[in-house]
Image (cartoon, rainbow, N blue to C red):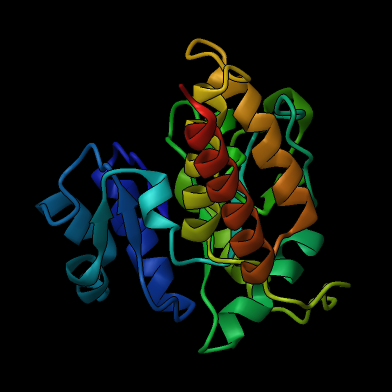
Length: 233
């Protein structure tokens, strides 16, 4: 999954890598280039079909809504508020979702010039940093994709917790419900809501909440909203 890719040559190269490593689908989030243009097709070589099947989404949240296990990549040494995982741990956690047809996983790469924002990183269950030099940590987009996809082909340690997290769309819907209620009761304010809710999102990500737990949270929020509205004059 590529977020706002700007270089058609990079997109074409990634399409070729998808074919090399049998990746079923390439998703593009608000692409800033023509992924079906001549330059992209030039680099895709025999993987033009991957480009033609690629799906575009307006936001990262929409692109990962059906994904339970999401690994985002970052070249920063210490993204603010986001714990980093090494390749073996992050890819080992993602691998079961790619091997199970009933599951859905995503590997997310950011913009060529500035990567992913902290808010975007918080939409992932794991944040992967490759073992590049701290003095110059950022890799070319297609090189980073190649390293990660090759890593996913290797035998990796099974994650300690094998229970399936809820799909991202369920968690984001629950957070939207909670944000609306917390704004109504004054716990959140419009100018600080995003930052404070980001901490809640990070907490739930670390907990790896399941679908029944998210349903419980949504039920609590809805009951609280009903109670506050009932008591309003």
